[in-house]
Length: 71
Image (cartoon, rainbow, N blue to C red; front, side):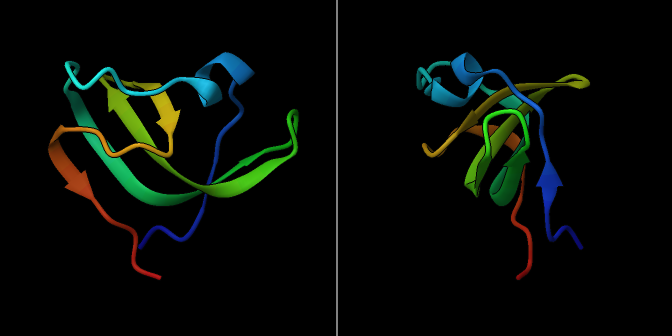
């Protein structure tokens, strides 16, 4: 069960939005994202491609697999 995910990401990544065209291998919907560098501590959706975080966004994103944390 995933309750929180700590992500150190640049402001460009945090401000990014899904283009609607890209499909991620995994989207974690409603994850708690904590970034000490920018002081972000909010619920976001995380798009993962391969072994890397591709996007952190408020927008929903299409994915081959989708995991929604219980909470």
